[in-house]
Length: 183
Image 1 (cartoon, rainbow, N blue to C red):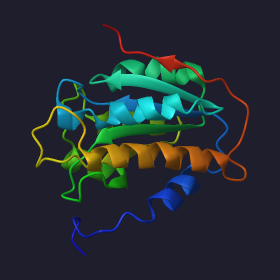
Image 2 (cartoon, helix red, strand yellow):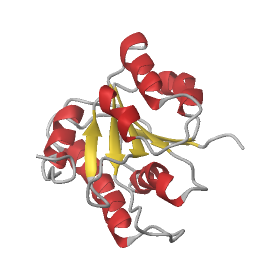
Image 3 (cartoon, rainbow, N blue to C red):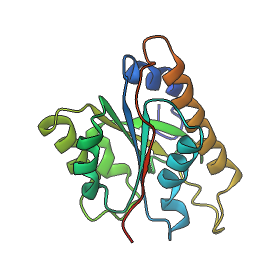
């Protein structure tokens, strides 16, 4: 099956499995907010933050996710979920958990350091399981606003995080806070 035709109907189940047992989750929004198709990760992180989920700390990392490795470690999460725009030629608004090898080939972002390097560092060196959720942008639109499909993907992702947190064994104590990128 081609990447475009790959259904993402198992996304919610896959996300729940990866968050199972997590008591403290860090959600990291990644992307360039000046570029409409690259800001989906930031939009999704804001949507997750608006849900005020217990045990979830949201970081708005923008184009410098590597600058957040210190604050991420200090927040002591047991899982890190990075949200970023990714192009795998799917239907706009589609969601996909990206493995490390897929990150660079699907990236639409302009990060100062490749996101795969940040993920590998957090996963292997810091020993915090880290994974990336890609949101498929709508490249057919020239609008500066989110398209209906992109907005649907952002909402679906936020609700999937909430549902995964509510799943048995995923609940736990923790603080909810937000860290903004430096200006």
